[in-house]
Length: 514
Image: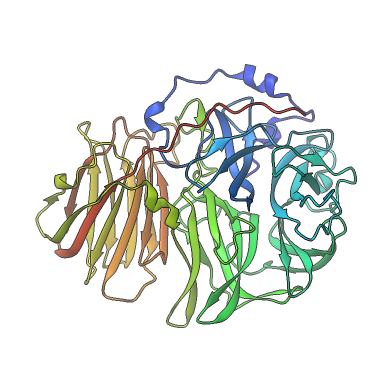
């Protein structure tokens, strides 16, 4: 998440200095997403401070306005009524003498526990990590700390707390990404903080004074890289409340590089206890990372991730922007055998994007079947497939240039897969091209798949969201030729597609004031 730090030296570089370092390559409008959020220009990574307030979804994000690669981090800002039609706003938080503005969260302090509210105005409070580059080489164990900023105008402008930092670093190199929420049972705020190779929980009555409660995960879960961007929240299954702890990790994902793992367990306001020590993944594709959930959404748990991977994020060939976010997803729980899994499904708001679907009934596949009747001329569409008996199959998306994206299921290995080795540009990174797999967790004979295709991405949701995969790709022209093939034979009771209308274009972001 915080790459390139060693390239920065010991000084706070200005956005202008970085902008002059390299001119952007030619624009690539063919890869600009139609319904995923992406900044109009410059670098973006992790979603931050996601919160719903007064009918508006706020998305803050790691942003560098001075270039197309990672640089001194700011909090960019966008707003939406539905998580689909995003409007870029002025930059919310700028670096200052305490450091760059790294990842964090935002809450609605409805009880005004912080005292930031004035004249009955409810404050929005952002909790973020300061990263001080001046300390990076001389004192790395104290480079990062946690701080506050607040807004009294529904997120339009922000004031940094004069008492920052509110959580000082006890001597941990990676000490960051606070995700804060109100715990009603305990009557206090809980901070879930990534601390190198584990999670540390803190509590506070007022967001300003924090007490360490416990830590989790030193010897549990995947540890192929640093733990980052955690989240902690309750979900209900069959009338019982379980707590889900999300932990993003880089590297160490199931298909290489960045990924999002999770644990299901209990939390009593002090300690998180997992149901077991099995490693589980919220998304098996290589291109969902730093995913966390929106605050203040009631019983809905809405998730958004960064659609890239640190293995090649700085090299992907888009211009004049780099990176997009995933579609919004609604999380739930489901039990398969003795295991409880997190499910991830497209948020219901996405239905408003879809044109009237074209549906094919009883599609028997033995020899290759052309799906030209589904009419997907733009390459931006939703595809649904249902079968009463899942068998090996391949869905091939191609174009006149001979490029192909291949998705499907391997019955012998019981795994879904996405193969982008021939789906367009790959030479920008030796780590990009590949065939990526995800285990099938469902045990039913039948299956359903929902796929969302945009200009340069696909998101796969199988078995009602039990398995998810996210993948980016860069074809020279849209992949609009669809066909199915299966050596063993498979029958789909239904195959349907619906074109997805582009969202209104965002305005160029207005640079805010320090």
